[in-house]
Length: 396
Ligand code: SF4
Image (cartoon, rainbow, N blue to C red; front, side, top):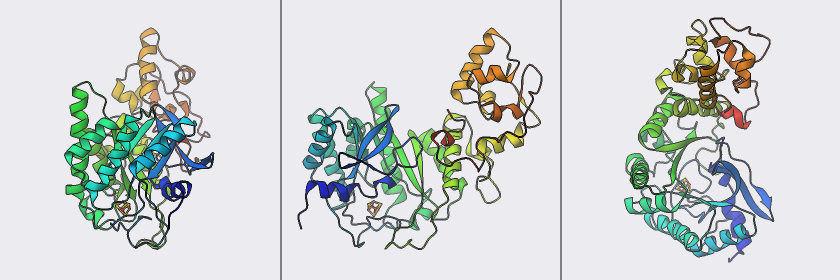
């Protein structure tokens, strides 16, 4: 039965909160703007209203966690590239969205599906769409398709779903870890490097893991995260807490704890922005991060509690290891101490340091600052789970 464009939009934007494009990794539910479901996402350094949509919710594959898996009985829809692009352009002109994130179920194979996604992007470009564009790369997209996506979009993503082929086989047995997912990611990294070397713009690259049902440890996820960030140009790794979807093979599994995911994000920032390596992180005997305290505090309790860092002489790397000091505040400290010695916590606070976190682990001019033990450490399990700053290792 034919359905209206509005109905198709509702069908195709449903469940898109599963696809992250947010600063915190935990997607917002869509809001209705002018009757259209619109998500908010981080792009170009700010939060913008985004049309997150599937080009098609038909899919020939059968990933065990996915609401769009083949054979699942629910109303589906598909849009032609021009239809989707024109609707996005109209929403942009009306000021309802500032960008689009387009993904798709797979029909007729990955290559044909990727071509349709690229056609949508080309149509937007030919129509001088000025907004942000995020394009999903299909598993097994070819090198040329990936290169075109990296040239056309602001961001591309390939969801790895799991940290190895063994774990992936428990989630999506029809996906090939090396041949389809890592290879596509490699193509994207190569295309990005080539374009940047020529001084051309290139899409940033992100990926996503489904956390929980495959039985992976935090170590499994963080080891691969480090490789992706340091060797494959991946700017952002998203950890999606598994939530069971009715009428899927994993429907009776427990949802993953949001606290686990929060700790993974904190560890991600430590690896990406703070110079930590996965094997320095405070993993327990099972290979998991502590849940009760954030990983930077846990690391500092083991390493800095009896060997505090002298703020006036420590190098950048040492300063970054102190809880409460992030890349920005580290730079401010380096600048400030060229002019004066830093002797008390108020001076640190004025530079933006979170002194409640930092105080137990620093020396100021050779002296330990007074610590008020009654103050809770930020990052403790009692803190609200999804405040934006709680995902940063130090609230920066
Ligand atoms: S290929 Fe994508 S849309 Fe299709 S079932 Fe797997 S995750 Fe879902």
